[in-house]
Image (cartoon, rainbow, N blue to C red; front, top):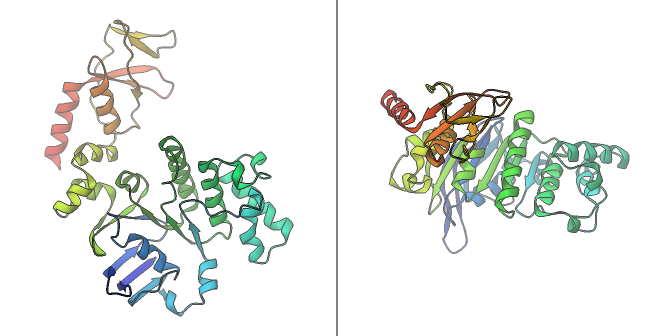
Amino acid sequence: MITFDDVVKVYPGGSTAVDHLSLELPTGKTTVFVGPSGCGKTTSLRMINRMIQPTSGRILIDGKDVAGQDEAELRRGIGYVIQHAGLFPHRTVLDNVATVPMLLGKSRREARAVAAELLERVGLATEFASRYPAQLSGGQQQRVGVARALAADPPVMLMDEPFSAVDPVVREGLHREFLRLQKDLGKTIAMVTHDIDEAIKLGDVVVIFRQGGHLAQVGTPQELLEHPADEFVAEFVGRDRGVRSLSFDSAADLPVRPLPADLVLDDAGRPAGWSTGESTGGTFTVADSLRLVTDLAISSPVGIAVRVDDHGKADGVVPHHDLVDHLAARRGRK
């Protein structure tokens, strides 16, 4: 657990970056700091590994004050991922990742073996090992940066806007990779982003800062979307928060109707479109979210979302009016 105990950071000239921050980041979870520019989120992150020193207050990792620890030793136990990966341009991808285990005393052979395993873990094929950073795309460089941060197997990882420098399609793939890795590894992660959608998608806990380094609200993504603390939080998470909160509810309880005659199926029973020639626009399963079903029903040319089983065979439909009734009943239960 990472604990901020009444932490203040005032820069020379009197500018307050962080104002009496008290906060706990749970062990094994991802906590995302988000807020407008200049709100203190990056300063807060960098005080964890002492890249920035607080003016007052304490920061503790598992009950141990970081101020009393040797800086080099502290940072060896904390992985750090930055926006542009920060790779050594003159070293191969493999040697970039192997740098950390070598610093920790492993032989070159051992370090390279560790690096090769980590590159595979973050989804980079073996042929990338001998390339240099300039030969990689932005998304590939970011994966190498994550692998290097994991090289010492740190219990804590700090991530400073790690995915903001890549395009939306690449970012989506990196998000999936991050969620998969965190599910496997269970690191204690503190991440900074300026993107509330990214925070809601990746964070187990989301911390919203307001200008002046003040804490506005802490909670799970669902709590922030459904119960914003004030007008600032409501505006920051977006006026469409009601629709976005549907991402946290399953479609399993949705009532479905029998397949209509105008739904065209292929020989395996998979939906091929409507008899009018229009596409279904996509399908959903019982494991998907209410938000997906809502998107499908709204975008469907006939106002119907089609459900399929695990084999892709159509097994029911949800017309938009049934979905509206279900959402209204769901709202009444909350």
